[in-house]
Length: 441
Image 1 (cartoon, helix red, strand yellow):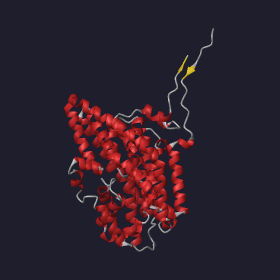
Image 2 (cartoon, rainbow, N blue to C red):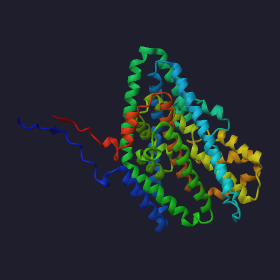
Image 3 (cartoon, rainbow, N blue to C red):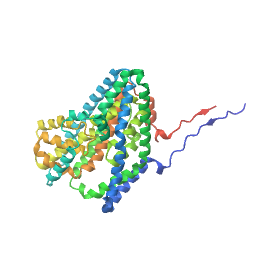
Image 4 (cartoon, helix red, strand yellow):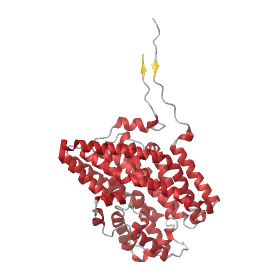
């Protein structure tokens, strides 16, 4: 009997390590930090800063069309309008519950480890006033009216996420109501979405350059000495954010049936991009694509992720509670139990819809302080110099939280492909780099 001949389609060889994007981004971050430390004058040149700012602008120019296309596509392909409302309600319930845990954890850690006591710092109220005035010009005081755009074109041009999201939801329901008559328009929107993702893939090749410029400028401008007096707050914030991810999000992940550590490894490329740019929005398109690949349904991803970027800011919530307690301790202001409860309520509201605003964490902190105790507002300048160093962790916590939220809502809705979830999380390299081996006998 002749031996059976076995043939196989070879698996494509893995990329060399130096061609993997996340490795390039990590190297760029390290080089940027080193150059910013050794040659600060060079690192603070305008063109170095432009490398990081330019990359973020490249990404942000695509955020609005990505959100519009994915939300419209997700809603219009659903035959039952009640499902959209059901997914939205589930997402909002999840956001509020998990955000409350983030706020309470921040208050708990801030009270247990009072790093603000004994800080000898004089707040520069003039610097704070200028910063707040500039940022507030970009944000309407009336949050409700700010959601409604003066014009759809203007909202898309400005990249206002909440306004684009509102119009996308209405437009998606309109296409749903049209039924078959809207099939061609749905196909056009789907094709446009794929095209925009193609542009994202091109832009992402510049991620190492952007990460290098952003990190070099930050370290060169602020220097290592900027962390000396306030290292306690920075370290406490980092530790609290890590505790939230590992414990709170870890428990949620375990309920669904996956490991939070494997999930973090799965989105490591997006996390490194966020680390280099200090903006969770810079990885939004890639995150949405990876979540669909992970087994989350397209409608859920299209609804939960964009909404989460405005309503599920876990890192920002932790930052606001810790920073508020830190400032109060530094200025010698004792906050009563009622005032600390007020922080929870106010911070829950002020954090909504601030992700697209320049200096969002700092502005929402100002709003929180002014309500809790106006005497604390001048103390914002104490954390002003290190806000940049905490923005990276805020962004990292936000993107991990939104990723876990999407998986959870997909599971809650009964639309999570568990086989794809475990198959992708258990792979060592990015699943996009693999081809399935086929054997015949």
